[in-house]
Amino acid sequence: MHKRTSRRSQKQKPGEKDNKMEFSGGKRKKLRLVDDQRNACYPHSLQFYLQPPSGNVSLTEFETLAIDRVKLLKSVENLGLSYMKGTEQYQSKLEAELRKLKFSYRESLEDEYEPRRKDHISHFILRLAYCQSEDLRRWFIQQEMDLLRFRFSILPKDKIQSFLKDSHLQFEAISDEEKTVREQDIIASSSSFGGAQLDLESVYKIPFAEALDLFRGRKVYLENGFAYVPHKDIVAIILNEFRTKLSKALALTARSLPAVQSDERLQPLLNHLSHSYTGQDYSTQGNAGKISLDQIDSLSTKSFPPCMRQLHKALRENHHLRHGGRMQYGLFLKGIGLTLEQALQFWKQEFIRGKMDPDKVILENLSIWVDNLLLCCLSFPGCPFRHSDPELLRQKLQAYKIPPAGISQILDLVKGTHYQVACQKFFEMTHNVDDGGFSLSHPNQFFFESQRILSGGKDIKKDSVQPETPQPRPSVQRSKDSSSTLDSLSSALDMDLEELEELLQ
Image 1 (cartoon, one colour):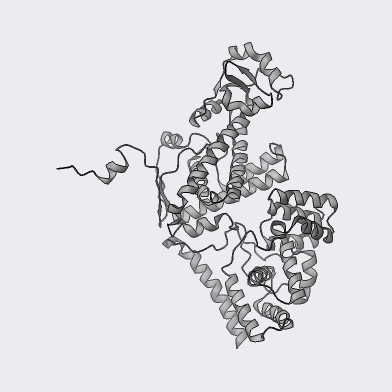
Image 2 (cartoon, rainbow, N blue to C red):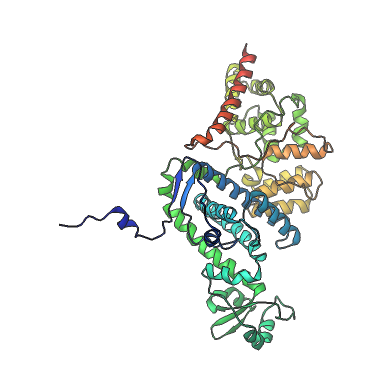
């Protein structure tokens, strides 16, 4: 008679670490770990993310961690395009962003367990979202590399060797005696010194195959199959190793994604996470009634972003927009201050000119108004930077009075798929500012920042600025502690329906 083997013995031996991350509906219970245990979990402010997280994560926390990571990586992208990487201004702004979002960044800070745990888990969540296409993987890898480069640049020198060991990198710092023997050869072979001495510089002995990029550029000293790499050049090798490991990990994640997507709680979030808007909620009616219908044409040429300007022009010329365009433009108009009554009048006037049935117009626009409560997108299908032919985009920019040098800058950003940054550059050029002092992420933000500049600070922004919160996303199964969000959405919907009933009476 055969002995029965338990499911535990088949899958996991006693004492083995379970790397599976479970999802629960309730709030996560914080683990009480003594200092040594906490430090052992995350000994450094940066890591190669070699081991997936374990333990329980609530759906609410899962979503919050993912959104904060997206915010961080988008800030990394914007800063990298606005400032030279490694400069004091770039470093200080990125550090401020990490501090604001409560991610780890410095070794000397106390009580870093939670920020490092957040960094660890959020990275793996975004692997699920950004493994789905080559473009998404490329973007994710680049931002993660830039983030690692920054963290490594501020890593204390006495922590570097242990970080390399924990990251499974066989890079050993040579002794001072060995460094003295090879000093002249190392300086002569490395372009990063410019005649400087090695007194205060660590030098790492690395297998030749790990330093091929430096070898191809004749920037490293080789001896007996090893490369002797100064600290100034080691970051390039570390980043190359990180890129290789992360690229392979994303490919493996993509292969296992169907199993993850079968979870109906996670599928909607993962499918839309890479496109989700993570800034201020402009769908609320704090600005209702602050603009009149006869202002719209003038405002469209001064303060509308190109996507909305394009939709407004098409509506005025054709007296009709397709459903997607109506949804986008309707949400934008609501955000800048049109009331429901004004919106009905605006759309009715245009559609009647296009010989559309007035009754159908009313029903159409009521549905737009209600649907706008649930609409959310970051990359608008009508974005001219993303979807226009380069030559057509050039002509549009010329028509908008962008100088030739500015057009070239914008087209270069578009070529590099930096559409959001291209829009921000367009804003700066059309408003004659070198730095708008904000990171553009929403059409309504473009409008309000434009009004702020054009009116000398006396703009028509909301009476009370809402804190940065994510727009509503596709529904996922929520826990009880998420009910307040649903209650708020239901309350907003009730307010608009009450306004509708008054108009129909």
